[in-house]
Length: 259
Ligand SMILES: Nc1ncnc2c1ncn2[C@@H]1O[C@H](COP(=O)(O)OP(=O)(O)OP(=O)(O)O)[C@@H](O)[C@H]1O
Image (cartoon, rainbow, N blue to C red; front, side, top):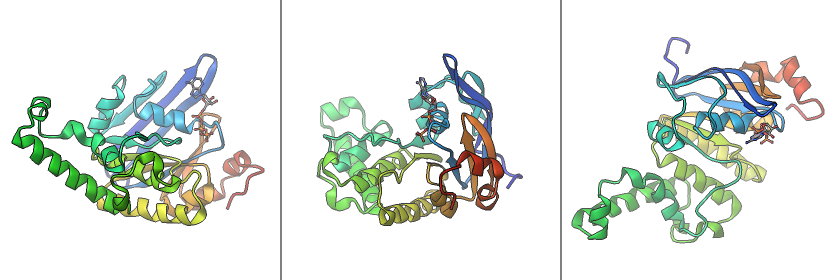
């Protein structure tokens, strides 16, 4: 694995909010095709780390390289175009839009037709729209959401909304997919199906996936490697087996079940 060039290289990254060091000295390498977990107790800095990877926050220290390019001060939309896509811990769908439109908005910027041709309803507008409909529908089918295509996103059952968020994140053609607690609020069966789906889309779309999860047992089942944050610091990284038995991890999760 170490012989490949990393897709993502994070060097000594940190961020302060006033006096609070939310994340400090984090190093991480993700190689193409890996499914890697990022775990840690509440408030450990996991979401803040995602926010730095996606340009929502500019790190106070360190560098983030994606395909060799420094992402410093790149705005979120440019980072998305470069190939990093994410979902959020709290679902962020366009609630009033239909299920299919939630997917279509994600890749509207990649559409071939121009604004003028859509205003004038020129033929390439219709062929472009048709192509987008077909592509969006393919994503929906993959996620078993096609039967809901015209329903408002807010009317989907909770578990389906979570799946729709992932479908939308995929529609921007990412190479790196960041999933922030995708199974939050799901029942065990939905969670298991979701983990299978994540493993499947990783293969199908040649993705590298970084998965935030609070529940250790869940990440242990699907991830090849795991990074552990606690109080903003990386306290361990390794295989699930190494993490399971790591004294610092056990200490950080003291009082919680490490399965
Ligand atoms: N914009 C901000 N301003 C001030 N403090 C912040 C900001 N964003 C995050 N923090 C703080 O940074 C720390 C890390 O928070 P973060 O949400 O990244 O943790 P987390 O590991 O994702 O937690 P959880 O598992 O509960 O989601 C917390 O103390 C949080 O209050």
